[in-house]
Image (cartoon, rainbow, N blue to C red; front, side, top):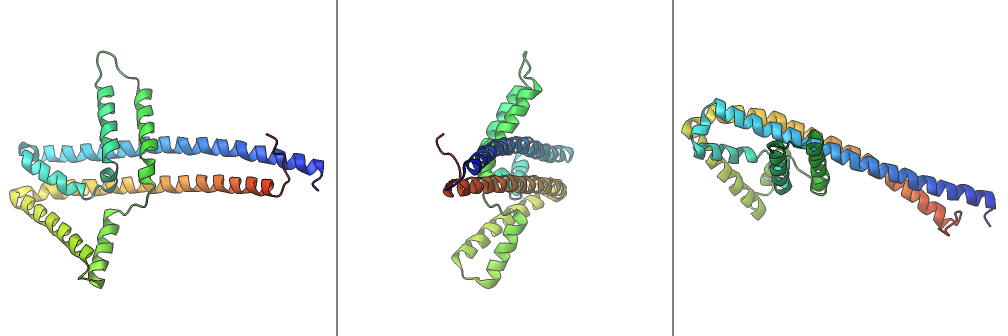
Length: 230
């Protein structure tokens, strides 16, 4: 039989753990909000730098060339492709807020929209993501191990189609533009990778801490050393 003092101590510990979990839940949400701001700003910087490079090289005078180049660049945009719908919705809303007249939206509301973006896309982001360099490496290994596999044939076809498009664009005299644009994009895509990976690590640490506290609560309850009247 559990003595009264132990019962009170363990009951207090249970409530203490629940309070700590509530604080960690808030910390987790705040981390996702910060992630939304960080990721959105990086992606927008990337998009604007590519457009600026195209304008600088005069490629924007030919809409078809611009479209071809952007299609190639999208191959490198792993995260952007996965969150395309919420990203475009958020971009549209923020653009409208920033260009609103005669009443201007305060920066705090724009920040809040970016924070909501982080929370919205997290279920997509938290799934396992292979960056473009990892995907290509895996495909090459598959091709080397089993060249007759149907999936590998499909991958080869996809890569072949991409290369054909790239060659056509290069033949149009945009090789320099692609090189510069991809160079900028590659650097900023690494920023995207770092932003996502760091956030995943932070969230994982918080979630593991929460899980450990829930396990401790379950242990106290299962041992019958807490009051469960409320």
